[in-house]
Length: 491
Image 1 (cartoon, rainbow, N blue to C red):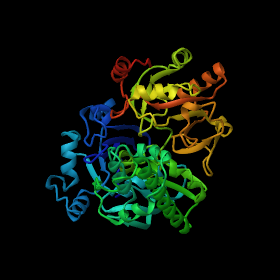
Image 2: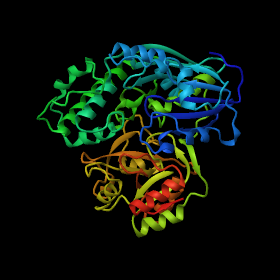
Image 3: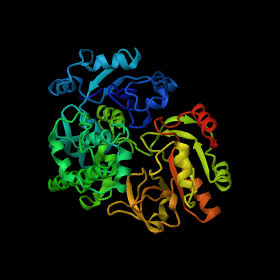
Image 4: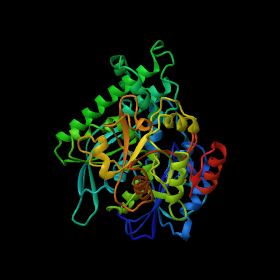
């Protein structure tokens, strides 16, 4: 759909889970991108919240166009096909937007896009590539569960997408992994990352028993009697092995189209950083934007409405806590107590804290991992991520092939000195790595100061929240966290 020039485009992902909104201008600048849950304080909130809507309206922005991330009537048709029935008040985009936007932006032009194409655009139009093979793997959109696109920019700079191959419901890697997540007692469409972490503690004994489930209508409602005597860790390990096998089969097939050696990978399954470690065996260059799931499709829908490359700089796109990044205060807390929180600048867009809404700690202490897990009310087996100055990453970690950096905490790699950094090493000897380039960011300056003080270029980095709650968003959230959990949070 070709649009006349507009002042601002609003992309919306809402109505089902993890609602989000993105605002871009007509120069391709991303002005704001935020999650509803950070405002409502309800994890994975499906609906837009008034606080998020007011944030969209900041600076009296004129919203001339609203882009919705999927096609409602197709989704309802699939729900009817799967036996879930039809929600008659959610057949059209305007019905959903009327409910979600609470009367704001009445009269704006509206465009409706498809679920997987919104995923693809969020990745390709923020990537550094002019041509790429785009792979989308998620639970489900309308009917699609896997899509492969050939993407490029034409002579006028407009993004073009040609679908090369796809897989449709009921076969779904994402639904399968969510079903296993439910089976082992976790929350589907939320705690799949815990399943991934649990996998390292088990043995993949049930891969063949799990395989037939991929062709069945799972609905995230797997029978609680499934493998009744199996250890949860073994089920998680088996699911992870099978998931990786399937992902790599898709990547191999995508490569065989020979469209591009650049990979853009999107969809919720792209958050499986354990599987991501081997993507370099299939493609030379890899881009996964930091919010590849449905929330990121708010940006993708806006990108499709805009039509050209977006000016991507970093993931700090949400609510802003003003003020200079508290480097000195954080250093003082880390040297004295070895743990501190930081809530400064703009919140991260995506599920992972990257330094602006982080709980940080000295990675060298044998007791630190247990202390941080206790603060966050998490299971003791859960690992933590290292954040490292990018130029030191190869010295301390085996970076996987094809990954020169991991700025958005997207891969795992083996730590070369596990005895030195026990707080950021998983039971299998790997770490989920976040590298920080020489970008002048607050977390960069903090790491540089920490290195100067201690000789260590690494900190433990985890999100500033406790299990079951969204990340801290504003200063009030930070004060609450500080009071309830006894950790100083600097702004």
